[in-house]
Length: 415
Image 1 (cartoon, rainbow, N blue to C red):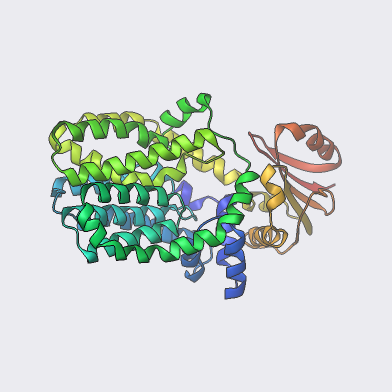
Image 2 (cartoon, rainbow, N blue to C red):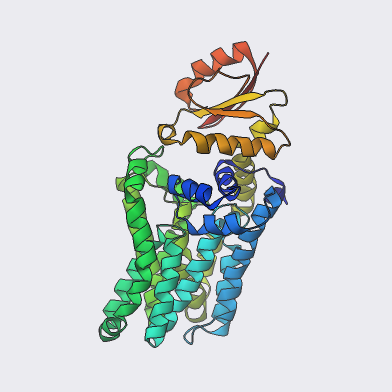
């Protein structure tokens, strides 16, 4: 209920702004400016309901779809009990549950990654051209939802080539279905590199690992439990197809985490494509190795209820919709950020996001994006600790509210 009634947070406001594009030309411009992959944006643009509640419905349906797919589309090497266990884990996994009604691509990514996992297991069981085409097609769709899915698809491809060399060569034409994902990624690569060079986040440091491994909402927890899963599966190897699938998921997870040590990357929620193959291994390991992996999983997720509650409250306060509701009299509102990535912000897109946030509060204002913080009669400013002195100066002149954190939000109106 907390999530359903929460205002949109900052990333969700971007999805809402793109969904509100009135023409295909405007939609195309918005998705080519954004650094995200386009498939979810296409879905949400075609979705007819634009309220906060309406925009969250697709994510809920997609998350439930992932669990239903795991329960109903079952490869021969997956028992009925393991399939039902896998469906339950997908539904109750803390990070997946966290994004169940997020107006972001994660629920679509979870569904496609689950379908991709099932398709890969069936391909390993009996390789055919049709099964290879299905697996490659779903992999391509997952990559067009989130680029990190390419790492999982690549690891699965290596596993397929390793275990079925002759069949892999024979089904090689299926790779043509990767063409849309490859073409889009090649087209967007210069923009992605520019954004990465000016990103606001830092490489993962050694001091970050206790938080990333133990926080229930961090995808890195799935990598930790993956070691137990693979050990349980390896002891008897009841299904080489499931072991290969879980191993590919864990290797992809490890590669992404290692990359996060070397360059700025978000390595918690973006590990979601690795979860379905690892959770399938977890479900399958119960049948042969008892409940040790499940016990480890429960231990890692013990703090999920409190983490979910605090996480939902924190992210609702980090956005445009809540501050917009705190400026009842301002007519010209400036919003800005002192983060490194702010210089890459598209002015028209930023102003459209703020205009949409005020519209959701029943108001129409003139929105401005820029560094002249006192140009209008209202201000929404996301700032770091280094600019606290500047924030104090503004507080002395304007009526202000402050949400403090690693990145604080200053919301002000002229006196």
